[in-house]
Each structure stands twice: as structure tokens, then as C-alpha cells.
Length: 121
Image 1 (tube, helix red, strand yellow):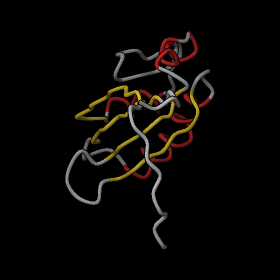
Image 2: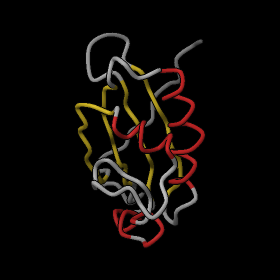
Image 3: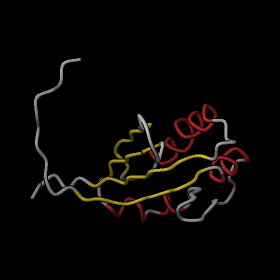
Image 4: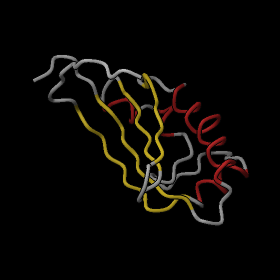
């Protein structure tokens, strides 16, 4: 058992084929992730695109603990997963959240960690 108490929020998703993916990625990185990183307990965020297959996108947020997802700041944010658009979502946020498909979202607590040799680049 790890004593590091790392927790991650993992979200996998596809986007509607009619959605401009460049615009989606700009919004996700510059607005969606940025809003979450301002919330207490959010430590880092990483995003990935699948090499092949689906879902196409993966987002991983490192959290101080699962309670980071219960703060008033986080709960007030627009979220498709929570079916919450918040008090004043931008038109862009509404459009982008509407275009997200096949969402899978889970919270994980670390149970094992091993460090390995870094691969040569």
C-alpha cells in the first residue's frame, strides 16, 4: 500500500464528429482545465489523444484526495458529468459540453507505485 495518498480523476471521451476538434482542444486546455486547476485540491492535469480506437480523449487530474471533488468551487463549475452548467456558462462552454460523447469518468486512489528507468527519447 502506498503512503502517498495519490488520487486521480480519469475522464475518457469522444467528441461529436461535427465539432471542430481544434476549437474543442483549445477550449478544454484553456478554459475547462484552467477552471479546475483553480479549485482547491487539484494538483495537476494531463490530456492524451488515443493513437487509434475510441474513446479518443483521456484527461487525468491528480487530486489531493477525493474530497477535492466536493468543494464548493468545483461543484459550481460547468460539468457534463454532473449535468450542471453552473450559474453563467459561456456559449462556447455550452456548445463544447453538448458535443462531448461516450463519457466515462472515475476517481481512483493509488494502491501501488513503482519507479522505473526512464526511456531514452
